[in-house]
Length: 391
Image (cartoon, rainbow, N blue to C red; front, top):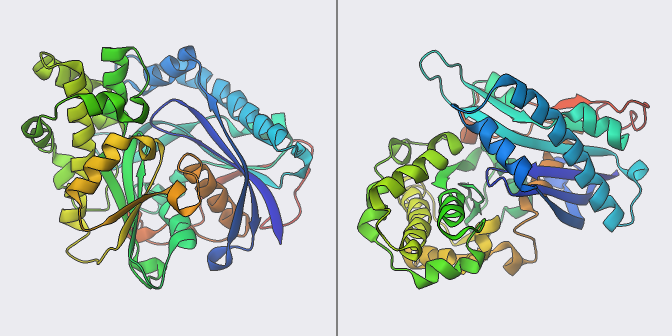
């Protein structure tokens, strides 16, 4: 049965909302997905600052999080309206919306008195009311309830779309955080390994904001002009996270603004382009180090397919190729897909599994005790599209 859906993703880069309008046929290993339209709804500087403030342990407060939850709900609804209007598809044609939400805080393991937990906001009731459409959200919580880290979740969609009988593949996402899905040749779902590799664009972007007054390094142009201080980047790998064995996940709690401030306190005497080049090399190095520690000893890989905003950073891609010379390094565009739309599409696929009553976490990737159905379903206020799927 064919379904129209919108997948929504707002990641740790805090640059905007990705919305992918897709046509889905089937579910599970029979899933077929077609990207109809894709847009990014950029955050205003005020909203971006509010999100970052909410993420900050010192500056956040309950009133701010409460308010932002609803503000983001309206913005997510706007993203749905914009992508559907661009595709000339009426909202009434949608079967469901799958929203990852905006991660505000993530505690993958118990930390002193803090419970293992996660929080994504962007009120689904607002999205459902504004669009008149069923919304699946809160994807990470059920995996955590089952003992997992609630991340990464994209590996299930990666397996459905990219498994191969002839090639071992690594799906490397480089958003704010880097994460990899390892799919061995002729893999079953139980063979999948996935984990966060460390910072993606997060440190690079923060340096660009502070040193250049720009949100990111377009095409890696500043990194290409700077000199890489390899010994400095190597020292940053001493963070305990890199030594931890998968499953593991991370976020702004570890590699956010405080991490960058510490870099500037120690190495602020270096030229701006050198710092950006070194941070770019650090991302490439953390990816290569993760593969050498946790992937290559057990899995034969033929190619890496890069998605996320980092796929457009030519300096970063070149560094990865030099550090992993035996891998064919491709981008999503090289194989006919979209680097930017990949994660939004993935959550539409996860929403489709939920609507069909199917589990879609990968316990080996998240550490969950068992496979579970992900997400909470918010019904539309007018009762539309209640029939079909799992409901």
